[in-house]
Length: 431
Ligand code: CMC
Image (cartoon, rainbow, N blue to C red; front, top):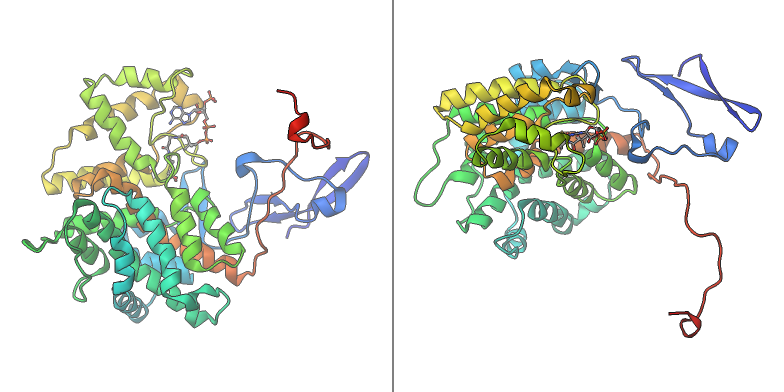
């Protein structure tokens, strides 16, 4: 809490509002008592100027292009850490020791199998179901198979068990959404493989042929997951916190986060980027034509993978992914023509006044789809991969919200509908 106060003058009366300054000098006017004291609320659709919580997990500076988890820069984590180490950091607030990490990894492995009854539930999905719908329902179904998890106020070690169980089963459910879609038998998790290799094996092994685990692919996916692991109070994370604030169980809260991520303006954008690049390629690769379409207000087309709610200079994740993309493709010996189109599109857009004035830059999704495709992930599973990566962040945010005993989320509104009027019985209504 700062010594300084903000002054608000309303109807000739002056109110003093506390100012809160974060550790990175982010400033906020504390309006928690505003309505009680003044009768006013603030209006902020899309919450662009509203801080919904005080958090110690992720710091993001959109103007400077900074992203840090628990203080550690994303560039260092992507280069030197692993996804499960980052998950530990986000969830427990500190870097693990060697023993802590191997214990964490072991517990996750021990929880990777899916109960055979839960598998029957999974079997019931139609083959053409979208993987995001299957994943959200499967995660929510865990609350039916582990009813003790329904109470989020259990002792911390029991809550922790729910967390580890979720981290353990997530890759199995995701791989099975794929197997279901292509009609192949499910592959069970294996004890001898690390988290990412195990996932790839469950995705791509068949009864006829065991998948060859390539360290280049494991590395690339691990990095991608680190970059997606948290992004402070975005649409899906805020959804997780909002649902969790009602004291709904962890699995219900995460399942809602998955649904929020589904939309094309959020996690669904990575899929849309590849669809867009393919369309441009098939259309003859005329970049300027598509740039013009994106600028045309009468055309609903937007440059997918461009622009961000908070990054207004560059998205640090996009920088790392662009470099990784070149590396992975060349190491795997893959030539993907859409990578050339993506690079040209970026170059033209970054020199176009429309994009410069609106501070529109490539975001994390612009290049991530190209890497995912190179490692064999089908396009309609891209958003599921985003959810996979974001899971530790959602868990950390849910845990923080519960530990801080935050109140139930309940925004207000300004009502603009009809004022009071009397009901007219149907017989007396005019046609
Ligand atoms: N292509 C063309 N014009 C755009 C784009 C785009 N991708 N993004 C924003 N604009 C224009 C928009 O039309 C508006 O123009 P004007 O001021 O003339 O009306 C201006 O830029 C501001 O747009 P906005 O929608 O008010 O910006 P926002 O900050 O509310 O939206 C966004 C951010 C990400 C929803 C938006 O940039 C967008 O739709 N991008 C494409 C979808 C996408 O890539 N989403 C992934 C986001 S990153 C993954 C994640 O973290 O979820």
